[in-house]
Amino acid sequence: MNAVRPSGIGGTTVHLTDERWRELLRVRATDPAAVERAYAKRVRRPNLLADKDTLFLIAADHPARGALGVGSDLTAMADRRALLERLLIALAHPDVDGVLGSPDVVEELLLLDALDDKVVIGSMNRGGLAGAEWEIDDRFTGYDADSLARFRLDGGKMLLRLVDSDAGTVPTLQACAQAVSELAANGLMAMVEPLPYHRDESGALVMSKDAAALSRAITVASGLGVTSAYTWLKIPAPEDISVLDATTLPVVVLGGAPSGDQVADIAYWDGALGHDVVRGLVVGRTLLYPPDGDVGAAVDTAAKMLKETR
Image: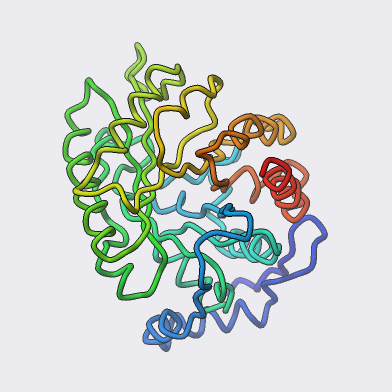
């Protein structure tokens, strides 16, 4: 039997000790009803936004779509204990408002008592597996609106990749519209992540970063569902900030795939954070897997940047 590895990232305080890890595994194996109890007892914070009307979330739904890579390490996020340790470090920062995660990750954090007084957004569509031929047909395989309401979470997030040449976009559009409507009926945030894509000469999917494509994606996402009252948009920081003039909906800036230059990655968000519609950040790998391994310092840098722009 493999020995339990000691945890701790980059010399930081160990959050997921051997004892906590073994207890998590024991509960997973022997007491599945503990998950529902953990949902029920979670202390919800009264307001979605922080004092300055901002929102800073850590994203942790990548593994459920098979997107495990960080830089050259194609399986960086496959080590669940290491991922949870990094998440616990990030969530311990006082300026981190909460997490965006798939059901498995959210439930592990609940069992570790890490989500009291935190915003929790559940990831809804993870069926468009990274690299799959059907990737654009992004089926809803995670939370649905009913479960998000039943489990007392704060909203649901959906990925909407728009590829005009791929008919798989159509069912995803329809499913996202239905989810927006159902979340609104439950008074829950619908976080839509509209990303324009095209296929290059090899057939690989490539995100379109030009202003026209991003503006179009924003307007399409804004019109989904029977009401936009509870809709938020999650988009990459555009080079042309005027792209953000395309909506009155609240926007959070996503982190995207790390480039390997953490300073440049974080600086890239700066311009967008100053726009009136932008309310905050939703970042995963860039902060959870910084080049120097210091998760706490990376989160602190991003938190300070957000504070300085509001």
